[in-house]
Length: 449
Image (cartoon, one colour):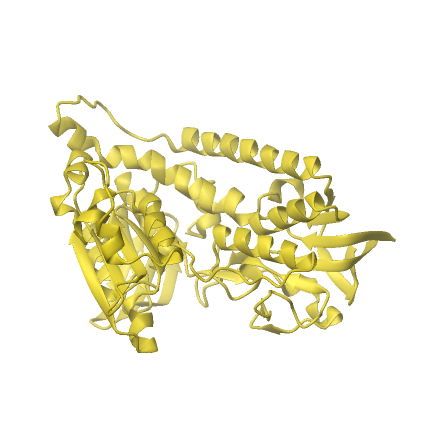
C-alpha cells in the first residue's frame, strides 16, 4: 500500500497547482492523472490554450481589409489548418513539459491511471491501493452531451474535435451561444466559413447583461454570422456530404444543411468514475458539494475546479488550489468571489464583479456609466472602434462594484476594474489618476472624468 500526506486527483490547472504548493510546504504529495497526455487538463489540451491559439492566428485574417486601407499590401492571406494544428501541438507539448518540470521540482509523485475511492481514506488506481491523510478532487470536466446530437467526431463534433480537423468546412452550425460557441463562431467566420449559431436561451452569452449580449450579437451579425436565439434542435438527418438540421424557433421551424455541427452547450463534472459514495462524499447532479472552505462532506477530502459548482475557469481553479493548500496547512481561507469572465471572440467580452442583474436582485442602488470606444483614438488606430465599457458604482459612495467591456483587447483591460473592486476604489479616485495617451486603457478614465 502506498501512503501519502495528500493525494490530488487530476492534473489540470487546479490539481497541479495544488499539488505543487503542498509539496513546497513539505507535504508528501501524489498526483493522479489518467495518462501523460492529459497533464494540464482540459485547459491545456482541448480548451483555453489551443482555442486562444487558433483565435489569435485567425485574428490577422480579419484585419486584412484594415491593413490594406492603411497601405499595407496583403496578398493571399489565408490559413493552413494543418500547419496551425501542428503548431498547436508544439505549444501544448512545451507547456506540458513546463508543468512536468514544476511537479518534479516540487518532488510530487505522479501516478498514471483512473482513480476511484475504495473507502473514506483510500483510492484504487489500476491495481494499486493508495491511502492518504487528505485528498483533493480536481478531476475536471467533460463535454456536456446534447440530448439529441450525439458526437460522432465526423459530422457532429465537440470543441475537442475542432483541434483535430484537417480541412476547413464550408458551413457549420454551432449549437450553444455561450463563450465557447461565440469564440469558435469568430474563428470559423474569419476563415470564410458560413456560420450559424443556435442558442436555446433568449440571448447569447447568457451570463452577461442584456445590453452586452445585444452588442455582441450585433457585431457578430455584421461579420455575417447568423444568430438564432430561443432555438431548439428537434431533429437531424445525416447525408454523405452534409447533415440536415431542423430547429424549432419563436418564428417557426427552420431547416438547413451544414457540413459540420459543433455542440457547445457547456461542461459536466468528471465525477462518475470516482465512486464518491464509497468515501461518503455528497454531490448534486455530479457536482461535489463543498463548504465555503472547499471541504466536502468527508472532513478529509476537498474538491476544486470544474468538479464543484463554481465558475468553470482555469483561473478560478488556481485560486481554489491555493485556498485548499493553505487550509490543509491549518488556515481557514475562502476563495475569492471577484472572478473575471473573459470571452475571446471578436470583439472580446470581459466582465468582473457585480452586473446589473445581480445588483437589481440584491436591491443595491447603483449608477451605470457607459463609455463607447468610438471616441478612442487607439481603438481607431487598431482598426476596430466597436464596443463600450460599462462601469457599475454604488450610488451614494461611488465605490466601483463591477464592470463589463466589449471591444479591443478587453480580456487584458478587465483587470483594471478587478483591481478597482478589490481596493474599493471610487469613481472619483479613478478620475484623479493619469492614464497614458493614446491607449485603450484611458477610456476607463475618460468615462469618469
